[in-house]
Length: 115
Image (cartoon, rainbow, N blue to C red; front, side, top):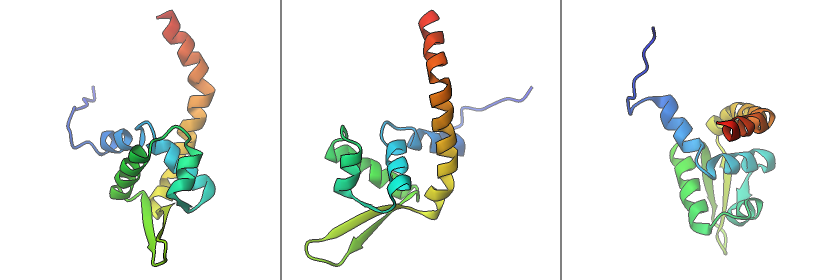
């Protein structure tokens, strides 16, 4: 029997915990659908997100190398966020997960109600 450890250094658990936060996956999907976006445009796509939560989540995605932040030397300053190559590579997997959740979500919710 294969055993699985609860090791804190498991890369799969670490990555899934970061991208499955309340807003991270939605930000990744927005950037994938729209290309490079300014902060305000991302916030408009995700109507219920606070400015602070968007900032924190973008920083987290940037730390993981999934999103890049580009500052333009303009007045007023302009900043754009975009998927990195790593973020772009991740998107087919994210989209598969989203499609699976859409297809199976109703059945899972019914099972929960029965339990």
